[in-house]
Length: 445
Image (cartoon, rainbow, N blue to C red):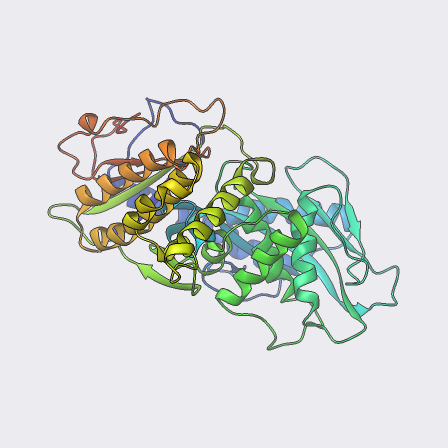
């Protein structure tokens, strides 16, 4: 069983579907062409680093696919801006969630995977005395218009500000400052580059946070051995977004960006912050599974959307349920039967939000079992049910979002069992179907 990911900037009916074996060949050819350039880039820039799974530092010959153009662009801008080459580099991937939407901040289950699209950061810096007023953090981002952003990382004066994108960096700096000895602060220069589309629902913010965290862990003077591992690193980045960006997000985005593994989905228990790798088994006569992430280019911004309202509605539903079921501390603890019985104590919107979350948790666990067993028709049906629940009960479709995701199950080609479409209400629906498919055929397009 192999898991492939293809990324299309727009969803078009003429998109090419590449049969599994041909896709393998193309990936290998692209990588072999890229490898000499990667090694040459590392030698030329003499960047000291190591590699880790998921997010990590950038180390030849194990750079993640697609990282080299970003590294080159960021290094060029860094050198032009600061007059010297960077000494450190780090990266973190974006993500797409296969199933399990709006369950992470209610203690439930999610099933995301890390993308090849990612954020790269190059930089140089150190831990310095707080009294060094001239020692600032200076950050710049390719692809975001605006001047160099400078701020003092002294924890006593570090606060959110403009531009808003830099608050994700500041928030992570604030979290990591707790590791430093008294009277110390970070001072660094960094340039970020990313091919994770902004506002596409692919967690560009988490990739920015986690890459920043990985850079800070490499700076001269950072206490070795103080680096948080696994879930603890993800939690720090989550808290950075809560405190500096005003976004009450769940743990999913930062968790998968930190701990994603190539070729695997990651089932995350968002109550215990424990992740379990999920490999997709082969079904009868099926060699590959192809996951296509399509960007409809309909932008969304969580902090300016109804996301906080949904969080509040889920909390309100939990309070109603706990009144008659003390064991319910989060919607994770409830059953659909409990929600139906408590309907009279909630307004209709709150009831439907709760019904989606509780039923979605059940669907995630069932989808994991189906994928591990190679039962793609069952997994496809669960994804279609998730889409309907998101659309009807959680009302996630953005303004202006086309209806191209409402594909009746009857249109599923019978020769591709398990063909399904999962729409999460952002600009980034995920489609899953078994390969091989006839070239030129995209189910539901």
